[in-house]
Amino acid sequence: MKGLLYKDLLSLRQFRAMALIIVAGVLSSFYSGQVDMVATLCIILTATIPISLLGLEEKARWNTVALTLPVSRPVLAGEKYLFGLGTLLTGTGLAIGLGMAVIPGAGYETVTLCAALFCFGIIIQSVMLPLVFRFGMEKGQLFTMGLLFLLAAGLVVLVGNGWLALSGTLLWVLPIAAAIVWGLSLFLSVRLIKGLDL
Amino acid sequence: MKSAFCLQAVTKRYPAREKAPGFALGPLNLSLPGGCILGLIGENGAGKTTTLKMMLGLTRKSGGHIELLGRPAGDETTRAHIGAVLDGVCFPGEMNARQVGRMLEKLYPSWRMGAWQMWCRRFQLPEEKKIAAYSKGMQQKLMLAAAFSHDSRLLLLDEATSGLDPVARDELLDTLRDFVSDENHSVLLSSHLVEDVQKVCDYVALLHRGQLLFCEEKDRLLESFALVQGPKDVLMQLSNRRGLRENAFGATALVPRTQVPSGLIWQPAGLEDIMLYTLRGDHHERTAV
Image 1 (tube, rainbow over the protein chains, first blue to last red):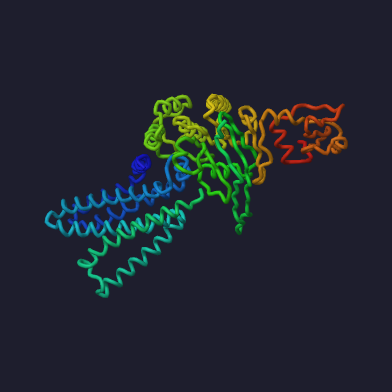
Image 2 (image 1 turned 135 degrees about the vertical axis):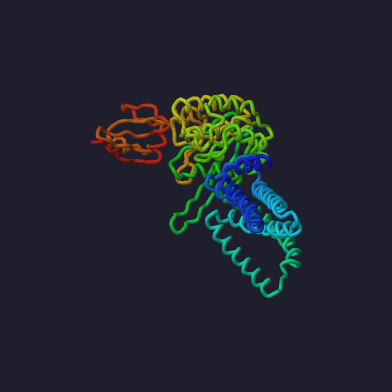
């Protein structure tokens, strides 16, 4: 596992363009005094890093190499979840830090927003990872877009009709839902990767 | 002597799809004693890579049993003692050799960093250059360096010599010979380059359209066959011939040495001859105009 994490950390250099976008967002937030947009950008972008990495690995046929090493299939799948959690936590930490720096008085609001975005990032990863493991990057992304569209539409209907309050119920439901979806997704990915013919 | 690996009635079936015909491999029965090199030869699509992938657990077998180093194939504990080089795959392109060494150190319990550095130097692999910038031959060498830098007891090499220049190929074959001088070490070398297989292997197995045509000791195999030259009609009467090649100057047939008719000119058959005559049967050789 440590070796795989080391490899993925080195792979982060491939996301320099993403870092530049975040830096530009950070600078603009200091200028405008708004953090919502850049916090969202920061968290969602870092949530998609493990998925983009899987796409690059798919092209390089990394799974074929990895499974000739003393690495089990469940570890290969699990590592991506752990790495994804790491990138997302980093993005969230950055967003909270930025929020505190730009609007020093709005600590609670910033943390609440970032926590909600963190949960949403977990859900994105949980939906995408098994789809990419199963269908590959190209098809997996299409399925994910469809699923996320349905998820967003569902949320709009629930919140719009007042069945779900954005500040109260959702803030409790979201972390629980994220944790359940993450666990189920990990379980599914392990099963999928176990049955994969390379 | 303990077997390095043992395949018993191993099969793999790929069902026919819209654009691709189905393929059935096996049943394969193969084993290799420790301290030996087995060459797996055959045409493209014969099933060589699929066989290696099943041994590594990358592809699921449809039936049968595979044992590597006395344990069922596919588990990571066994893979810690296997060195694998597969055709066309390498470590991530954005890494360099030094970083690959560090990664493998964290993955292999028996990783020897000194050996890794020595092999990288010996294969002239620049430590700081990105793997993506390596040539195909250099990437093959990098994979080989990794296979030699941990406690490998079995090497599974798929076309490992094909990307190498003649000098590097010869050096690798010497290294393989040294590797198996300890009877706990064995090699399965799958290759199109029959010349390499003839140079280095103790056993040879020929796969053809998913079927194992033979698996024999190389020296015995080479001693068993002869290339006989003579008039086509005489050679056509040899019922035990494996194949016949006709050209503008006459005909040549591959026959068991014990059955070479007296009075005909013959010469020892090489491994390539045995493979070609066996796979092509009776055929007419086209001559360049």
